[in-house]
Image (cartoon, rainbow, N blue to C red; front, side, top):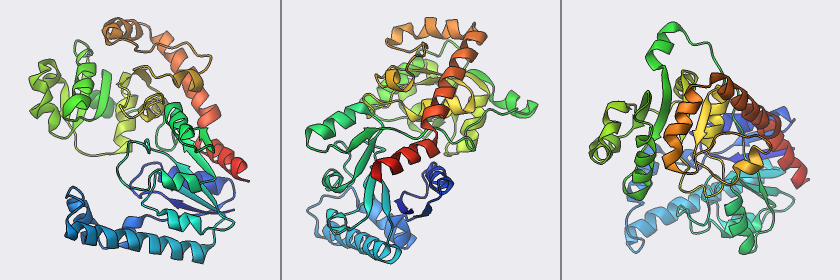
Length: 348
């Protein structure tokens, strides 16, 4: 099977997806629309994206940008003649490109809820021209089925064991990064930021390290949650290898549910399990599908965080047994090659 994937180059799971297709004998190539332009052209589009749509300059710049993207997509499809298009979110593809396809299966993998994403006016329309939609959240799946999209399945990619895996850390690395609890990530203004800060504030009486990306943490939220201040370590790079080390050097990794993920399992949980650490997460209902048959601690009320954390820190054997069961479940059912195999079977 010949496959074209449309996935941004900077997405960490791109090589994972490509390798999974290759492992199953597929001829696969990835195309990132940003590579159709010079760097300054992409920067210009990014800088003008917040301008009102009514401005002529925005209509001109963005209109030509989108036209070129879809013209390139058409040429690539005509030249390569793939059996399948695998598209992450929308990648600014236009419905007209999909309408004209013949003998090509189209699969969308949703990284974000298409009903709440503003990256394209065609976010939803393009899904009507798909042969399969992969939704990692049952709430998204239900919403799309209500509007008439029926070819949807709940699934998601597990961790890549070349990126997230248990390691024997050197004494130097372990001494530098070790902690009972660790968190890596950005923060936000508004209610999203308040929720994340409130969540982590409940862990501040423990040995917690927050590897904070951006200035919002210290410049804004420590005014409301002063206990966070001494826990924050500034860190401004997105680096999967670094994440793996930090998770390996932590006994527990707190995970707040992403506000856009209404039922789904936060991908951070999967990465933490891949690294061999223990995710203590806020509850979402899809846990009961993904981790069916496993009894594990979960946060259903922030006021329970202190007692749950104390129990887990004092019970290493309990932590180890539970995380092994959870990790094995991900490997058995959601390893990338097994997900790709399910996709291929659904499309054939």
